[in-house]
Amino acid sequence: MRRSVKAAMIAAVAGVEIPVDGLSMTEFGEALRCHPAEVPELVRYLHRKRLIWKSERGGHIRVFPISMAPGRGRPAKVKRNVADPVGSEIAELLGALVPSFLRLRRLVLDRPQRWSAETFANDQARIVEADQIMRRVRRFTNRHPDVTSGAIREALWLFMPELMPIVAESQADLRKSEKPFSKPVARIKNIEQNLPPDERVLEYVRRAGKNGIAAYEIAKMFRGVIDTSRVIDIAVMLENTGNIHVVEARKGGKGRKTARLFDIQFKPDVTENGTFYMR
Image (cartoon, rainbow, N blue to C red; front, top):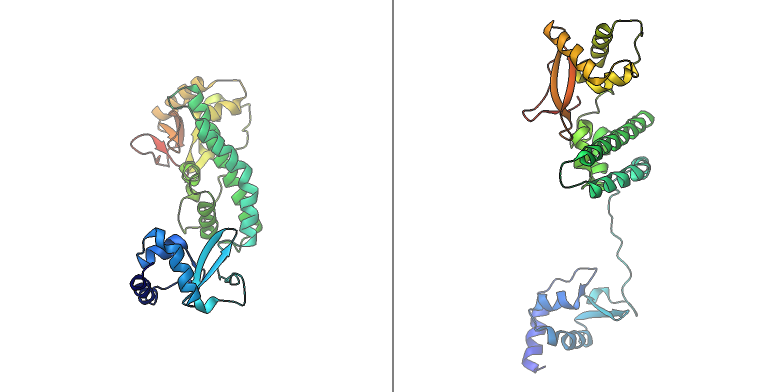
């Protein structure tokens, strides 16, 4: 390397700000705007002139400010004050949710591209996993009331940013927000079986509240006495008499549309494309 080039580099290195954790050879050469082939010789020269500190470990060379030069070897690691993104309690929750997130990731990878019965089953399984995650979160908030809902959401979206949008499709409480979690919907207990089918269906709808209830869910509670098609027929009759609302909707924007029943005092919150979100 010519002396004129070395002199120019000595003048240039004074204007380069080298961070305390050093620069690689490539980064140092780019900072000096030096040809890559001349960087190794230049680093050795500046090191001898005590303008920089060259440290080599495991075959890798790193350039540090001369103020970081120790007696020998690479400078000690710089302690960085990085704030803990989550507390120990939330970290415990994230660890408990790992199996659910792994199953959800597998469902996402295995989802068929074209619509089919397998696609519908896959979407329903994803909603089930999202429900499991929400239930674990609610149990956690019951045990740790001092942990805010916003902190839990922030930790979940930081932990699984690619899967949380899928969870949030069916779980409105886990969307990015600072609002407190809504109260869970109470499970509908079985109603007296001696009631006529129409009265029993109406009672299930009234107990479901503002989120309504799907026709197939009511059919399950009848335990084979009547099927979903019969429930829908009863629902249409109750709608004609002004007791309930019946809408075709899909939960969380996924899967096929199904009949969902709402009490007459609640207006169904259904989007134009038939998507219904739990409130």
